[in-house]
Image (cartoon, rainbow, N blue to C red; front, side):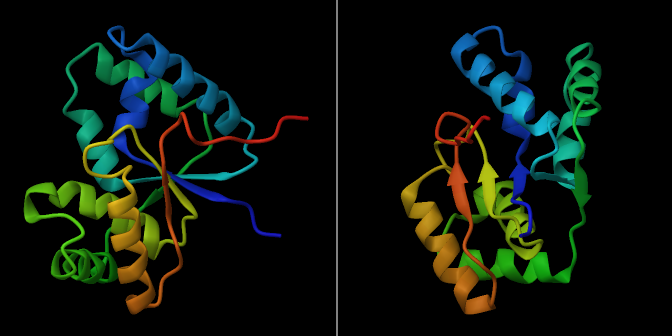
Length: 158
């Protein structure tokens, strides 16, 4: 059986050290402990890395240090991602103002991720967005993508 593929957007990595949101930070650290186990395939994109490089120091170094703790794969953006982003736009999943969010969704979908985990409740972790993504994914021949927060992502422990 294939391991679950989980895509992390930038917000998850950012909340590994967010002093003004300790409950979210703790839940993200719990998720991180699971990701360290390597039981799933953890994926991020080139755009996640680009966003992290925009963080001020010393947070930038700290966040890249967290990434070194887990096995992960960097997914590239290609013409299929671009086509799916355009599909999402034509289906009004999100607007052009949320282009980077669309790239996260399309990158995860094109690369066969099962789940996208995010703290972005405004645009990503919403039933409306998940429905639109999955309707569009079906039209383009891609699988379903669950959109979850670290709060709603659960795993079984031995």
